Length: 307
Image (cartoon, rainbow, N blue to C red; front, side, top):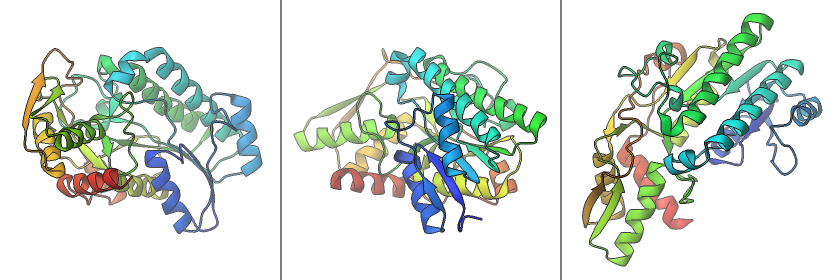
């Protein structure tokens, strides 16, 4: 599928996007990565001009304005506006340009806060998202619903892989934007180096997350692009639920920190639980994650120390 194909990857210089680009280029694709300095994806005319120039067969949309819980709570208006404008402009421009396949990377944040566990794709609209990141989650719902509408009215092929929390090399370690794994790696590594007796983490530690290694996710997104032809979302994850207490202990072990781990219960937990039903990815795409949490954390810590 990819050899000689022209592919636009938005967010291609970012975390997940950089791994998508590497895999596509290795498979023989001609990849274009629009940079924000040259192409504002919020601008419909800029999106139309980009696609008219490149004439891609596939658009992989992985660009977002997002971050960890602190960033989402501080910038809900910016997050909602920027992501809504990008999603709308790029999907419509892809339709007008006759793109054969639009792949919009969605997010587990689209699920309801009180979703049934494990979370199933046909229940994604069955309640309001976790309030701390609702602005972001609702834009992902909007992207998927827009793709379904264009599929129904115009026959456009839209595909929506829906990853859980990603982690791995090249993740964002900016304290304002970082998600839970890089934030904790940075905190425990600094505590180890300084000999600090205690690390304080946000929340109760009882909240759970499902974590997916970024290279597994990149493989899954490309598998979705190759094998799916419908706008129904597909969960990407491991199916393994991990509490924040367990995650913190695993990260402490990965960096060699032996001090005490404390929990600040005045800080928010975010969504109480996250665990996906991953049977659709297995049945529709013949895909399963390969890298377990211990190995993924070891690779991530090694990259962080060498970067």
